[in-house]
Image (tube, rainbow, N blue to C red):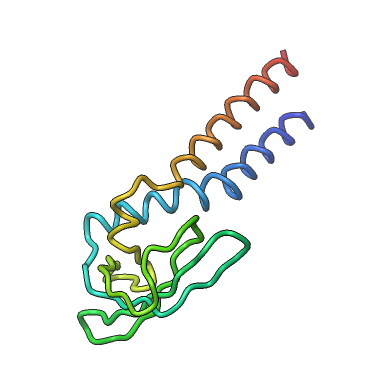
Length: 133
């Protein structure tokens, strides 16, 4: 009985801590932005480096006139230089939910995280199947 409790805990942990926030949620946000997003122009304010990865800050104005700053996720290279103008797609229901048009045009790195989680769950299934049978 304890084995099944551990198994259940590990499955919930993997989904809740690894798969949902780093795999499934970013893909759902991308899908929402592609279907209902509003495209506006944004100005690159600055870049923030963490070791060899960069995150950029963009400022844009919503259709309602609200000024918003968007921080891109960490990646290997810059999308724009300071002062460059590029397109941002934002969700009108949640303005902080945004991506650059270039980010949406690329394949999301969240797919790798999602498939990694699926493989991890499949391996756990095999391990626990062998353990309990």
